Amino acid sequence: MLRTRFTETFGIEHPIVQGGMMWVGRAELVAAVANAGALGFLTALTQPTPDALRAEIAKVRDLTDKPFGVNLTILPSINPPPYQEYAEAIIDSGVKLVETAGSNPEPFLPAYREAGIKVLHKCTSVRHALKAQTIGVDGVSIDGFECAGHPGEDDVPGLVLIPAAARALTIPIIASGGIADARGLVAALALGADGVNMGTRFLCTEESPVHRKVKEQIVAHTERSTQMIFRTMHNSARVADNEISRKVVEIEKAGGKFEDVRELVAGARGRRVFEEGDLDAGIWSAGQAQGLIEDIPTCAELISRMVAEAEQLINSRLASFVA
Ligand SMILES: Cc1cc2nc3c(=O)[nH]c(=O)nc-3n(C[C@H](O)[C@H](O)[C@H](O)COP(=O)(O)O)c2cc1C
Image: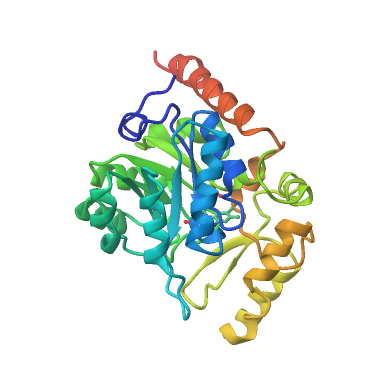
C-alpha cells in the first residue's frame, strides 16, 4: 500500500488518477479504474447533453461501488456548452469528486462545496496552482510540458514543475504528464507529489473505449512521436504525430492562422480516429509517455503492477542507496 495525503484526502486506495479525456473518459474506463482502486474521472463534455451525463454517471454506478469523479473542462469557446447545467448534473447525481480544468474554477466552487464535493484542479503552472489553493480547491494536478493535451505556454517539464509546486503549496499535489509506470510514480513522490495523474497510459488500456489500432499505434510510437500544435496561437496542444498534426504545424510555421487549420483540427475528425481507428483522420491527444508504453493491460493489471513495482523500487532500489 502506498499512503499519501492524496489517498487520505480523497478517500482513494492508490495514489493514481485517470484524468479527464475527451471521447475516452466514459463509464467503462472510469469504472475499471475505480474497481482497481484508483480515481477515474468521467469527461463531462464527452456526453452531448447534461442529461446524457446523468445517464453516464448512473452507468458507472452500475459497474462499480467505488468512488469516482467527473471532469468538467472549461475552455473559452465561441459557442460554449452549458457548463452550469453540466455542473448541476454532477451535483444532482451525488458525485463527490470533480476535476476542474481549462480555466479558473472559482465560479463553480461555492456550489461544489455546498454539495460536499472535493475538487482537484488541473493546471500547468505553479502560479495557477497557488491561485487554485487560495480559492479553496482540495488538491491540484499539475501538468508538465511532457503531457498530452494542453501543457500551457511555459514549457516547464515535471522534473522542475513538481518540486517547484511542492515547495510553494500546502494542499495535495498530483504530478501529471509523462508518467506511465512505477518509475514515474516513485519519481513523482520523490519530487514532492502525493500521487500521479495519467492520460496517455490509460488511453492504452483494455477498457479504454477507443479503436484497437489507436492502442497499437501508442505501443509502436516512441517518446518522439508527438507534435505541438497551436503554438503560434498561444494555445499549445501536444498531440500524436500523424499526417494531420504535421500538416497543422507546417501551416502554422508558414504563417497560417486558425482559419487555415480549422477544418483539419475539427473535433469530429479526431473522434473518427478513436471510433474507426483511422489514425490519420484527424488530431488526437497523446503525450511523450507513449515512449514508455509497451503493452495494452487491463486497468487492474496496470494499477496493481504500478503499485507493486513502486513498492519494490522504494524498498529495494532506493533503500539500497542509503549507506
Ligand atoms: C485523448 C486525451 C484526451 C484528453 N482530454 C482532456 C480533457 O478533455 N480535459 C482535460 O482536462 N484533460 C484532457 N486530457 C489530458 C489528461 O487528462 C492528462 O492531464 C494528460 O494526459 C497527462 O499527460 P500524459 O498523457 O502524459 O499522462 C486528455 C488527454 C488525452 C490523452
